[in-house]
Amino acid sequence: DVQLQVSGGGLVATGGSLRLSCAASGFTFDDYAIGWFRQAPGKEREGVSCSSPDGSTYYQDSMKGRFTISSDNAENRVYLQMNSLKPEDTAVYYCATNRGWYCPLDIRSIAYWGQGTQVTVSS
Image (cartoon, rainbow, N blue to C red; front, top):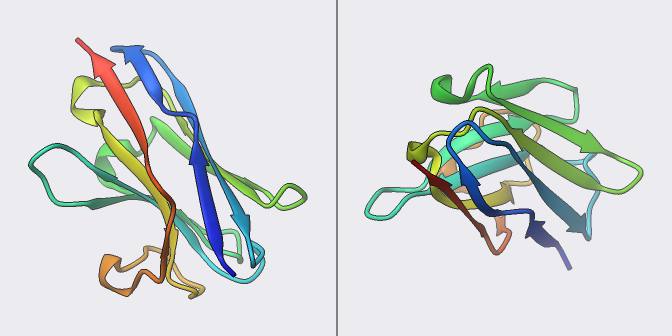
């Protein structure tokens, strides 16, 4: 049974940092690409970042240089390090997989979602 467990959200001031964690069970990160998505109030869910088993990564333009995705295959965890946070980064963040190999992940093809974690950036 595939499960994704997200943790690490919270409240941070503008310019601060947070690290989100996504722990997987039922598969390994050698099998599937893992993506991070977010949904702000009143907005559609959007892709943030993605890590493929071949080592390639993807970032939405507004996150490049600020966010870093990484994986710990021994722990079967994927992390999203978020630096220089802005109020517009406030959202619920999710990890997900479509059981595919390539990044970025098409949100319409997502097979499994983590439960989401709230990130709030105060101005």
